[in-house]
Image (tube, rainbow, N blue to C red; front, side):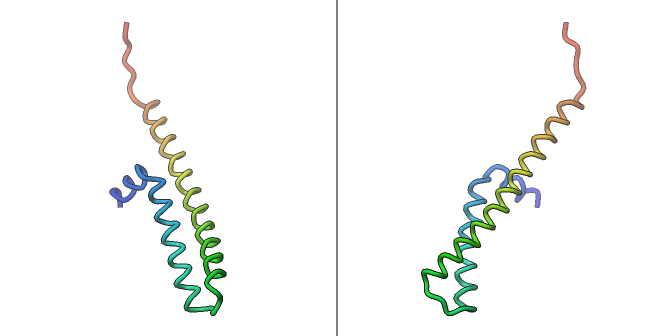
Length: 85
């Protein structure tokens, strides 16, 4: 789990793009099985679902970045300071 977390931390945009592409694919497959709509309408729905998921993932990435930044700031404050003359 830590290796996945570190990879996502280093490749935020790649992970968001991968989530978007997978959301479009899953939504297209799901809509094909459930509703007999035209292909253009299925693509519109898939794009809307992918946009919603992308916003959720971007929000999560922003929170992750915020907490990582705060964590490193706290570690720097708690580190022992040396007096240099």
